[in-house]
Length: 216
Image (cartoon, rainbow, N blue to C red; front, side):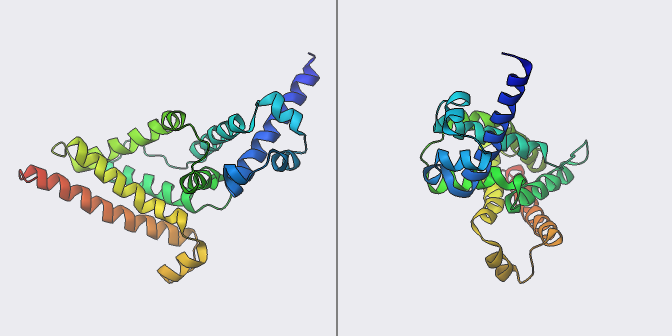
């Protein structure tokens, strides 16, 4: 195979992957047709079969690609600051990602589609993909709550924090604006992230203090 054909093949594969991320995040796995992706990518079904094999494989590859973009577009630079500041940065990043209507939000929209209609994702592969970010947040929670908090305390806190942010996935913009009484923009999202941060920090500190007093 000459270099031109290899380059063309890589470009076709990239177009298919880009289109798959777009269409799967809009329609979910069940309602997406391979032909929809091919039309968006400007190619044909044979190219999907050649590069990915089938729709299920393309779906997981799109998940991985969307997740890589999600990580790459994460503007958080936690540095070596206090755990509270690093936690605040993490929450701001989560809120922005969950509310982004563009490419940065593709991964979270695909995740929401899978939550509402779990038909295709290999959850063992998904957990392996997501595990580093999951453990990173657990470590942040542990740093804030302190050494007296049990592993179960830490996991319960992390679950509560994630769900505070994840709730934004299921609220459309007009409803969110109605609930908070203000237009959704970057400033509002930062204020909302700061509220979730303060709310969560208070809860984590309370857990640590309770355990320090020897209470269950």
